[in-house]
Amino acid sequence: MRKPEQRFYDWLVEGHALPGHVVRVENSAGAGQGDVNLCYEGNELWLELKCGDPKKLTELLRPSQKAWHQLRCRQGGRVLVLVRHRDEVTIFRANFSKDVDNRYLHLFSTSERAVIRALITRELNGEVSWATTSTT
Image (tube, rainbow, N blue to C red; front, side, top):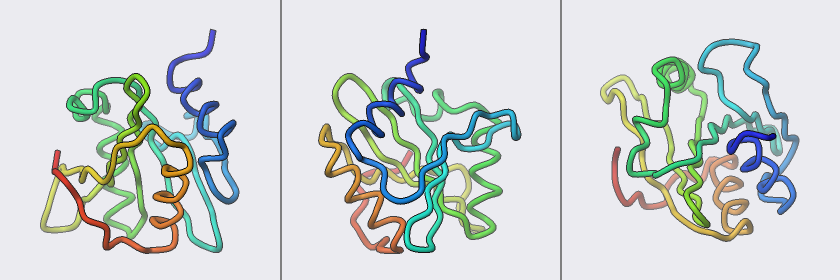
């Protein structure tokens, strides 16, 4: 039986919600590493997939995942955390700049795969000026 995060990945792929070259990483590579790597038009992005209540994001993430997000972001990498709860997906951006620690910015919530694809494409293209609604 497939785990909830695996089924979430299948749902994203089947609905063409992920643009570009998509690689699902089975985490034998290292503790905390993201679940999915995307490359689109020369831009790279990591996704962490979670299932559960997005209001409990920090509880859904393991300490090794938070540490990996922090290291990746501090080197200029980009990480989005997608949390599926019932029929809705909430997207957070890991934000570990040197002056801010342990923060995830809530970007958007939707049930539409086309909207998820558009938001991920915007993130990949560096269009990072969209408004955030809350901070976790």
